[in-house]
Image 1 (cartoon, rainbow, N blue to C red):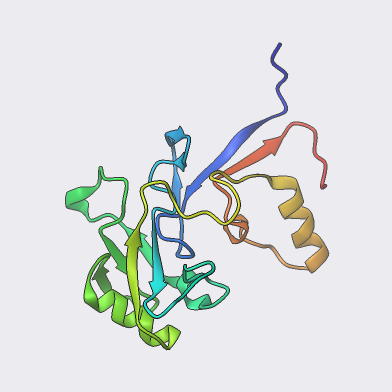
Image 2: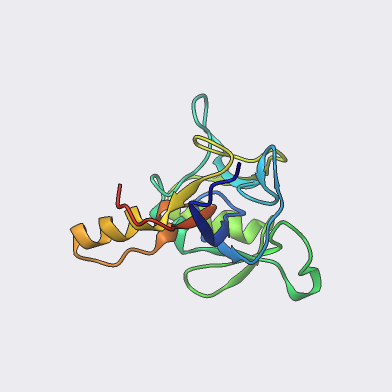
Length: 162
């Protein structure tokens, strides 16, 4: 027996770990999350051991980079280019992008691709909209739901903040 609890309000994919995400109308969900989600990440070249990926907790500027596909490759799952916070377009695996991110980080980095994704906790993140709205109310601001890095945002039929 199916019980309806809400509906999907938004779907997001974050092709490059800790960079800006993209809103999708549809997505293919598999064992390793959404196709194309968190399949790329920067790794400090001199990193040894532990969690190797450069994240926004180490370089907040990463959130301001916007990965996207060129118009010639609009059907691909992975981005081909990145728009920097300064508005420059750089190729995703290009030396210019690695140099720019490395300059901001303070050490050389390289882009890596993992077919199964690069996740902190789980391969899919689902969040109801109501807790986001309540956190915003309590904080006195209106947060962008993408700040929580969800893949799926659900609008519940019965509104409950937590």
